[in-house]
Image (cartoon, rainbow over all chains, first blue to last red; front, side):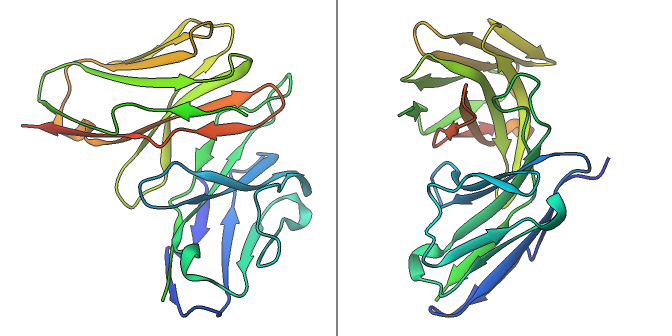
Length: 117
Length: 111
């Protein structure tokens, strides 16, 4: 079974430039998550999709970050314009919908490491 | 708001010793708790998932316990090996679909 695919693995940009990350979840997984992980910290949820609807984007800096999940499969996370503090690893995860709500087991991609200079 | 704490932040043990990793959380109304492993430069790999109705979960050398009343979970790794060196994170899921991660415990197993 193929895992969660992410690209690019690494990206270096200047501040105020834009960047986009792509994620392809495990086939059949309805729920897709984007997390930001800063060095030495646990992942922080940016946005959660259920199929192609947004479930939670309360911690997404909407003035610069945007995400979409067209057709309920692939997703793209965009940052425009980037700031120095956006340097982090951006992790995509997917899960089956839990039978009784809540969250099922999460499967993560390898992540996309962003460095903003 | 759920807060998840993992202490210690780092741990070094000699090969063969058992590992005990702690995770504490402030709100006992949880849906499940998951333990993950993260190798440097990699994503997270799910190790064990414990439902709120369970007390423990086992997989090979790994055993995770859950005590909701005291807000604690413990991950035991028996007979540690150098390949167990990694960062271990716990994540607590609430009943309404929020997942909160701890900062992780970085483990080094020395040969």
